[in-house]
Structure formats: structure tokens, C-alpha cells
Length: 366
Ligand SMILES: NC(=O)c1ccc[n+]([C@@H]2O[C@H](COP(=O)([O-])OP(=O)(O)OC[C@H]3O[C@@H](n4cnc5c(N)ncnc54)[C@H](O)[C@@H]3O)[C@@H](O)[C@H]2O)c1
Image (cartoon, rainbow, N blue to C red; front, side, top):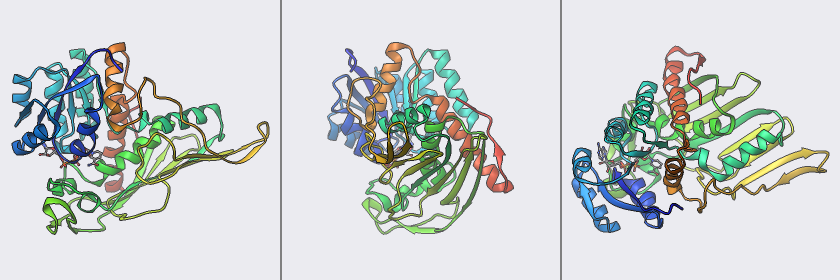
């Protein structure tokens, strides 16, 4: 942990802020949440009171004008990210942003360039590159533990924000242009795959709308019927690394329950499995089947994930320590925004693949 206490302002007082980030940040001795902000002021006020935060603001402009802080955490709705992030960076704030950073490669590039100009750092969700089990998997692949990687199969799906979890906010926005299942869920499977294997070369995808109308099943809007026929909610994505390695990722809002593992990686000498579903954990679900004559092992083992790149116990809000570590050492965060940009590139290209019904090349790297 840092010796200094970093002043953090959180923007977007919704489900993830209340369930995950604010409770976890409260346990960090090197972080002080000095303000929260939401365009629904009653929500910002309620979170300030609930989490003992000294100030709240009804919009980012007032936050930037009146509050002294160093890091902005963007947990607002997806369509708001780019504008909020650009304002924070222009004001010289370091940034941890929820995914996706923006909806176009050009906008992500604009954020990266502005951060460079302002000498501030960005760390971006999705947090998979920082997961100790993913770091361990990458090392195993680099060492050749499972030989040549032939295929990654990943799933990033649940029953939809209308079904999946309790929320006070109306979740309709998740289904509308500017958000959608690809950007909310596909982003996870794609980030996992590229975190393990690096930038992909080509993508293709089929997608459809499976549930054009939905009913909210919990929270403040329980029972409300919503129109969900604006965007696909069901995606099968394939990635190609151009060297005999493919990934297939099913993503969407169409799987109310599942027993399949989150990710499996099939190599010429073995298999790596991440057990569980939508797991963002320390790695206790990691298993590997190895076939190694020298080690005389032909069977399943349970690899122990490595420690984090800095002292600390794994939590989602550890992303803030990745950012602080990068600021203090003037290095690139593990949650490098260029990884996030490659993922946005894939997601934007997927729209072209669906429209043109063909495989398309990717143009970004990291
Ligand atoms: N809920 C989860 O489990 C989860 C998990 C991982 C990532 N995420 C990501 O976190 C982000 C937020 O998701 P959520 O589920 O918390 O959504 P949510 O709808 O519960 O909350 C979003 C909040 O952002 C506020 N907001 C919107 N525009 C704003 C603006 N311009 N300025 C300030 N506040 C603004 C809304 O009023 C709302 O309170 C999304 O990017 C989502 O993909 C959510």
C-alpha cells in the first residue's frame, strides 16, 4: 500500500458503486473517498450519508470546480463514460474507469492522448488482466505448460440486468443503443481471452435478439416491463490469432443459470480451466490438466496463483492500487487502457461483422 492517502472522487452512484467499490474502498488505508457524484442528486446524497463521505455533487462540472481530489473513479452508466472521462482528464485527474472506456476506438485514443498530454494515468476495467489467476495462466502458457494454445472457450453471460441482481436504478439503459449486452458482458469474455493471449488478429460474430421484451424482477422497478428489441442480447463471438489459435465466446443476457465453467483453454499438451461462473476472484477456481513426461504427471493439478504485483489482498477495487502503483512508479498500469482500446476495437468490429456477415481484421494492438 502507498504511504500517501490518495483523494478519490467516485462518479456514478449505482449498483456497482454501492455493492462493490465504495464498501471495498472504505477498507483501504491509502485511499480516502472525498466525494461522490451522480446526475440523480438524491442518489449521490444517499451514498454520501451511507458511506460517510464528506461531500456529494449533482454533476461532474461542480465536482471538478469545487472539490479537491486526485483520482476519479467512473462507475457511471456506459453512455456517460467518454464525456466524464475526458472532463476528468482535462482537469488533470488520474482516472479509473468502468468498462468500456468509450464506445469507439477514436474516443478511447482521445482519452489516452489527453492523459499523456496532462501527465496523468488511466487504468481501465474490465479488471481481468489484474486477476491473479489470469496472471498465473499467462505465465503457464508462456512456459509452455499446455503446449500450443489451440482454443479458448469462454462465456460471459447472465440473465440480464433486469434479472441478474437487485438494483435501485432503472436498468432499461443497459438494453439501449450506447450500451447493450456486448458492451456490458461481451467485454468480459473478450478481455479474458486477450489478457491470456495478447491482441487478436481477426474477429467474426453471429448475434440475435432472443428476448425482445423483458420484465424487471427485483429492486425498485420490480415488475416493470421494458422493451429490449433495440440491440442483440445473444452473441457468439470468435477470435483468431492467426497462428492456429481460436477463441469462441458466448456473451449476452440470455443465460439465467449455468453450470459450464467460465473459461477453458485447450492446448496441445493440456487444458487450463477457470471454474465457476462470472468469477472475478483470486484464482481458487484454477485447474490445469497437464501431460508432462519429465514431471511424470498426466492429470489434473491445482496451480497456485502468483501474488499481486504489489502488496494487497485481491478485491475488485484493487484496480485503484494498480493505478496508484502506476502513478507512484511512473509505469503503465496492468489495466493498460490500450488493452481496453483493443477490446473496444473488437466490439466495434463485431457490429461490422454482423452487418456484413463476414470475418474482419482488427487494427489495434497493445
Ligand atoms: N452492476 C455490476 O455488477 C457491474 C459489474 C461490473 C461493471 N459494471 C459497470 O459499471 C458501470 C455502472 O453499472 P451499474 O450496474 O452500477 O449501473 P447503474 O445503472 O446501477 O448505475 C449507474 C449510475 O450512473 C449514474 N450516471 C449516469 N450518467 C451520469 C453522469 N453523466 N454523471 C454522473 N452520474 C451518472 C446514474 O444516475 C446511475 O446512478 C457500467 O459501466 C457497468 O458496465 C457493473
